[in-house]
Amino acid sequence: MARALDSTPAADGFRMPAEWEPHAGCWMAWPERPDNWRAGAAPAQAAFAAVAGAIVASEPVTMGVSDGQFERARAALPDSVRVVELSTDDAWLRDTGPTFVLDGAGERRGVDWHFNAWGGLEGGLYANWDRDDRVAAKVLEVEGDARYRPPLVLEGGSIHVDGEGTVLTTEECLLNPNRNPELDRAAIEAALHAHLGTEKVVWLGQGVYEDETDGHVDNLACFARPGVVLLTWVEDPADPQHAISRDALARLEAATDARGRPFEVIKVPAPGPLEMSAEEAAGIEPMEGTQPRRAGERLAASYVNFYLGNSRLVYPLLDPARDADAGAILAAAFPDREVVGVPAREILLGGGDIHCITQQVPAAH
Ligand code: KQY
Figure (cartoon, rainbow, N blue to C red):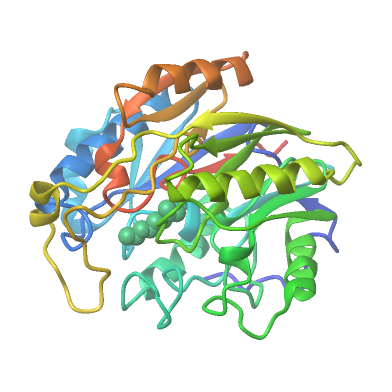
């Protein structure tokens, strides 16, 4: 593994580009662990293959796969998806992959955050995450990009940037003592700026209700462009998500971005509420040390958990009553993208959605 750089991206003139800036491609990883994916992961694999197929029409896709699953994945995926051997503990490339940064000359590097399975021994979702913690370094080896390795536990799903100096995140996740207990809010802000090249943090409070990542922002809200935020919304005051979304709206309405702009907020009505069925829960093989699944548990469903590819926006289909309206809102927010829905309940059952299982590689010049 190549030695990590001992400076920071900001000190070297690098910044994390916004997701709508041009991509060289997208990385994903193949799901297989039966204690997170029901029915031996077969339904989730079909969903991941559909997501990869939808994205590859817009930009190259690389799928990391274990040796044991190689032939199965190769057969299930379109020929245009590159399949490479990659050892993982699970399949959340947003969180285990590198956060890519670019400099003014278009050189690309990657930030290899420390990963502790969303909380380590204090609420983490599985007991051993060593392979996942090596994923980012391996992706950077394949891409031939230099690597930063900051002393910070962070997942890519817990941050969104506008590419113009603003980072959006949640207190529930980044100030959670199960990530970086020795760092206070000011120290976290400084670390974000040093590694993302940002200047201002906009703090939301909680993430989506019952989100097992401790409230990743990528399930709650994202930028559509600088100054414009898409926010998961639930109108019913009796639903716990209502107060969470209202609080996020109030914070956004009171905030300005790094360039001093107020935010326009576009509400995106959430699917459901959705719950895990008895049949779905029964298909998961419980394992010591892994987050158990129970019939009736609320699923942290959201339409903002989409992938923004070069020419396509790929979003999760989760609720026939709401999918089309969500697609129309996304199409209006991204008029230059073809908006494509992919059935994604099987991904949601594993604890995240399309943004969580993808990692864009910005185009280097
Ligand atoms: O949503 C994500 N970014 C990851 C979810 C992890 C769930 C593990 N069961």
